[in-house]
Image 1: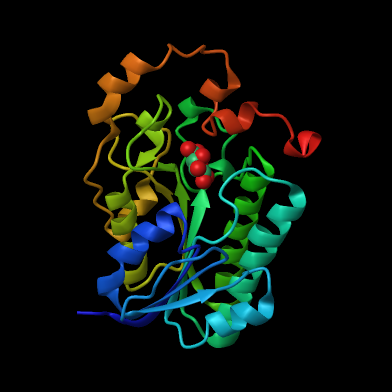
Image 2: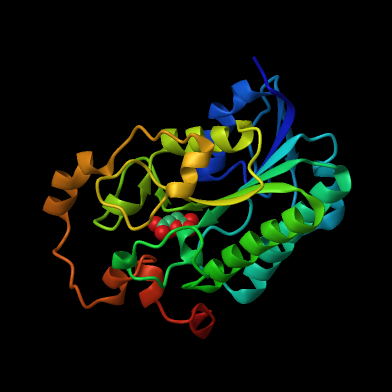
Amino acid sequence: MATFKRILITGAAGRLGSVLRKELAHLAETLRLTDIADMGDAAPHEELVQCDIGDMNQVLELTRDVDAVVHLGGIPLENTFENILHANIRGSYNVYEACRLNGVKRVVYGSSNHAIGFYERDAMIDSFVPHRPDSLYGLSKAFVEDLGRYYFDKFGLESVAIRIGSSFEAPADRRMLATWMSFGDFAHMVDRCLSVPRVGFLVVYGVSDNNEQFWNNQQAGILGYRPRDNAEDYRGEIEASTPVPDPTDPAVIYCGGSFTAAGHYEDNH
Ligand code: 15L
């Protein structure tokens, strides 16, 4: 039975938005879905609103009569500062501020490991370490995590920031043997983030039950998160198809992988 009247998902046309569009349908009478890109046709339980979350007036409309928001909208990789500023920073500010004005109770935010990408893998950091972004994209994730903390401390608007590792159909390289989150585990984690009675402001890591881990994910216990998948199942094929990594390469030393080794994006764009 549906627990919520209406849940809004931003970034609904993206890889993970498309997963939640299917997997969260049981949780709400209505899923309101938004993206700047086309989302196809609406099912009977769906409302589709194509819009730019960088525009506050549109976000105010979007968040009306909504119980909770799963905020995945924005640019999912490194980009120019102007683009990151518009879609990720301003767009997320608009989402939080519109939620406050419209009385929305909880936001689940699709953060990223790139907010802490410059920690060494061996450090086994937890959710409480200071940010160490590895990119402009990672900086925007760090900003939005702090935005969530601010909106909880000042206004009681609850948030869970999920620092997603690598959520794909299957792990694609050696780093993902530690950072992979299956689509099923992602949907389950978001379901828990929405369903648990109290979350306050919480930061968790979005990873499956992988044998190899970079992060201490103790905070995810608060959610009753029980991952079912393990990247270890793919180790044989990944090790057979990818070269042995150079242990002195920053992309191998740090959690953020290739993002830490890449130059400043603005230099070439
Ligand atoms: C992310 O934040 C990206 O959205 C995704 O495409 C992957 O690059 C992932 O991080 C990762 O670190 O593997």
